Length: 180
Image (cartoon, rainbow, N blue to C red):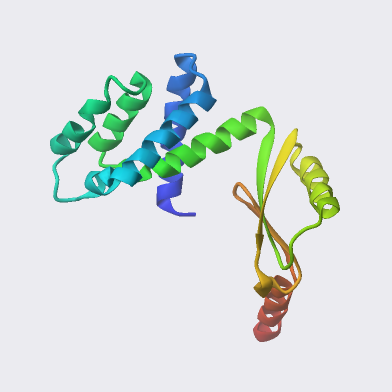
């Protein structure tokens, strides 16, 4: 697990506790942060904020016009990330906030990699399987087709990975044979 991911999780937990203390709607904060991040990317401001040549005060000046346009919690958090020279973690923090929001609502997102597109029946079976396995209320399947896995599937749910692909089984067998 990368150190950025771990650090972003910590920042997200701290930000989350502030948001809860201020009785903020987490979905609104996530949506607003997504919009801001998208705007930064479209205007190139994200690259400016990551420029190591610019000092922190200059970077703060770039976001000052946002102060009256976005919520104070998010603006304060952006300033905090700039002060700690951790602006690069913003997208990771957003991802972590979304994961936490989903956990609290009992929703999981299953990134499913399959060799051929799933039928509706199979998709429904996966939803029921993941609901039981992860004790979830709702499951969103994000399907991607990758012929290289030959057959079966690979699923990533949060930090959890299930590799039930033929390619994964063949690679495991190969490692076992080479180890002996």
